[in-house]
Structures are given as structure tokens and as C-alpha cells.
Length: 115
Image 1 (cartoon, rainbow, N blue to C red):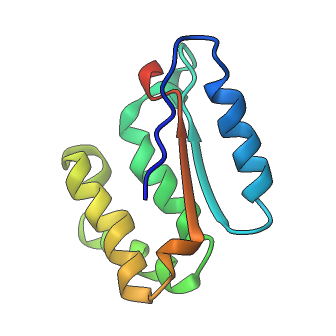
Image 2: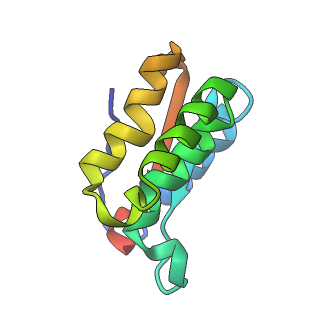
């Protein structure tokens, strides 16, 4: 399931995202990425999937092990492959392979338009 917040600048989308993140931090496994305009590395889209994958790997050692193996086989995966390939290899496949309940994982991406 996806919840997409849409609205004009200044309408409180980021505040809602932050509140949800704070509320869920203790209850579920939470991975977040907040884009920030003009901050260099934090505003680059190519860091999104690897950053989320790293956070998800902290939930389960088996996920971490799969990610390490994946990165050994394809060390430049996060630079040279498409985002859909990265999503599949770094998030979807490790989660499925370990049986980590995806319904218990919340991923929040904020300010996507800032990248």
C-alpha cells in the first residue's frame, strides 16, 4: 500500500511525514529519506534506494547479509544500474528472501520534488 501526500508548498506535507515517522518509530520497522534542496548529497536521487536498503538491513541480519553479497557481486550497482533494478536487488529481493514481513515495514520518502 502507498499513501501519497499531495498539496501546495507550505501545506504541511513534511510536517505530516515527520509526525508519522515519529509515531511509527517504536511500533514498526521504519526507513525514511527526506530530500532537502541545496544540501548536496541529501538532494541526490541516486542515494534514495541504497539509503533505504541500508536502513532495512538494520532490521534483520539476514537482509544485511544478502545486501553484502549483492554489493560484492555488483559493487557499482548503486551507480550504474536503473532505479527499478536497484529497488528490486536492494530492497524487494532481500525482504522476500528473508521472510521479513513487508507489512511491518514503513518507508517514508519526503520532498521528492526537491531532488
